Image (cartoon, helix red, strand yellow):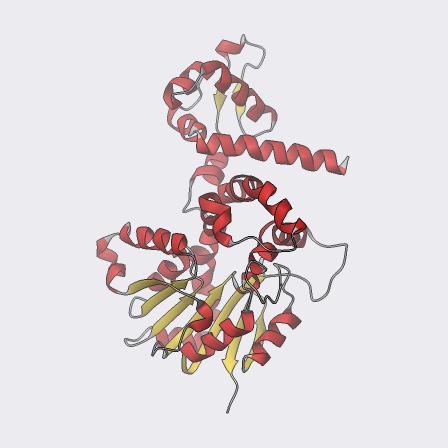
Length: 357
């Protein structure tokens, strides 16, 4: 029964993916209560296929339906405002659509390649997961960067926050992905320069497109720079002096996390800090894990561990990187660790400081 429930949920996620990709939720938000024919007209699709999807979505509890006993062609379906917010409003802290896109569009799409990777005892590079994974991963963290990160830095790194609010400060955003964290940092600290770095060239192209789409009045284009490159090599060519060096939700994906932390130490200005955001998992393994850790383990099997093992040699960390592992990596890189529990179900912060000498 547990597996049946999981299979049902997986199938319903796929139908939600269709609704997002085909613009059906957007069409319903525009039309308000509408028949299948009206939604099909609005979205440019076949009415019979749309009716099947609408009925399925109402059975799944995503849509409501007026007069369910009416003839099929006369039934009117509605996307409730709260559900529209969760599915369509990227600026809302309740936006959950990336959790649909990432596993279905990104991870499920590579399952045949992932099977071969496991059989051949090798990883699968990040680029293999494609645009859906990049977009889903960025979207999942977007709300954190926009709604939580400013308060976290202000409360838990007040000295760094103060230094970044006067001219002359700079931030390095290592493994910046599509740049949403980089842009959020630039908005938090309007006097600071922010430099985003990522190994994946497609992610850097996404980041540059996101920067180009910002309002010129914000002035972000003058203060934000993106560059493709290996984070483990950063700081060797005069890039040091950053008040804050960030690695958000990425260290566990890296084949050489200690090398990356050494690079972060090189990038950091005296008295600066390295800020990690990593999964909020338990101090030790237990099979009776909360749902958040179950999620992290599933993502690790399907994505993070194979990505980390796609380059050799590899630390083979995986998503479930526990605090002791972070402390060990940091110590090897010459950094001290302070664990910061921000009370978030999925994320924990770590402040790393350079050891004397």
